[in-house]
Image 1 (cartoon, rainbow, N blue to C red):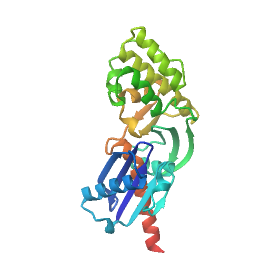
Image 2: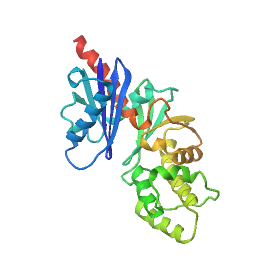
Image 3: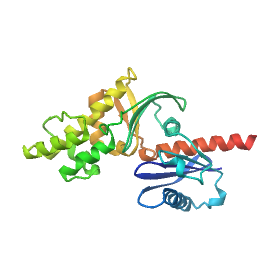
Image 4: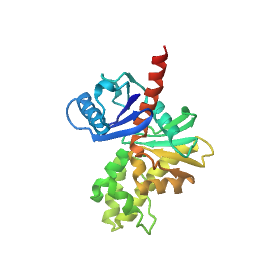
Amino acid sequence: MINVGLDIGSQFVKTVVLKDRINVATCVDKLGSGSIETLVFDNYITALQKAGIEEKNVDYTVATGIGREFIGFADIQISEILCSTRGVNWLPPPTGFFLDMGMEKAIVVKNHDGKPFQSFRNDRCASGTGRYLDIAAKPLGLSVEEMGEVSLKSTKEISISSNCAVFAESEIISLIHQKEKTEDIVRAIFKSMASKVHSLILKMGNVKNLTMIGGFAKNVGLVKAIELEAGCEVIVPSIIDPQLVTALGAALIGSENEKTTASL
């Protein structure tokens, strides 16, 4: 059985190819200008080529993410939270909660046996999301990727009081003018984000550990800040890129749907 999961986010498209429920190829591309479906299809074909699989041999394709409705060549479109939960359930070690952080969202989900039971997400404000981090990085002259390691050099705790991304940017510029060190400012940015995430985790009750997925799970500074703020262990997947977990879940759901269809 060949099953493919496509996760179309606001910035990236991710593809996971499963053969008999074993991950055989992945592909991640940044979305640019042009037709979303064309860009996603190119990513899909690249992943299949990596696996040495022809398109005609694919049994079932599932699209998820905010851009899923634009993907006409997929067999079915499924909500992101269902696919994320299914992907997290596949990962060791098992946890009853997970945090998914993307460019536009931060969502905490309580899950059991691959099914979501309760979830809380950030409000419409960019605070606590990757968008906030993207805005905050610019006055520092750093990439988002560089910020993680830089924050670990911090020796002084300072704070950013504003929850609004626009006002926070002004506050960061003010801290730069006050000659605060870059690493201390970055640490404060992460602490501010972690505070927003912690407010979501608190709604779940007693959370001792959770799995973190999404591209920002690869940011060591942000992960550390969330652990310190929330007082719980944050587990980042090691057997697959955390950015690919939702696409993996889509492919797994596709394998289950394909079996159901075949048995009818």
